[in-house]
Image (cartoon, rainbow, N blue to C red; front, side, top):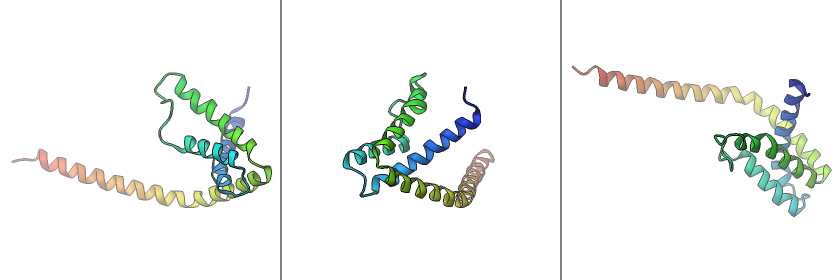
Length: 131
């Protein structure tokens, strides 16, 4: 039975390959059939709308846990190895650069939500203090 570290490493590889597919799709060395399938996989993976919603028991999670990694692995096999190697390197570089900026965006979002909650609380307090 796989350990938690093994599963985390596999999840990181799948995530990296999903970003690499996006980059390999744009590469002119990628054949048209691999491009078409990679476009389908990338759109399906990064889409906020699931084809099978997660609230459907078993099938929703089956879709996310089994089918998506399977599609990613199949798309990776269709793309020439040299293109995929270049795309993986670019995806790793992109991920390393993104981690440095991530906290600034998170802080900005928290400040915006905090401001909105303050305005909402102030407005509700004004409505409740009617004299």
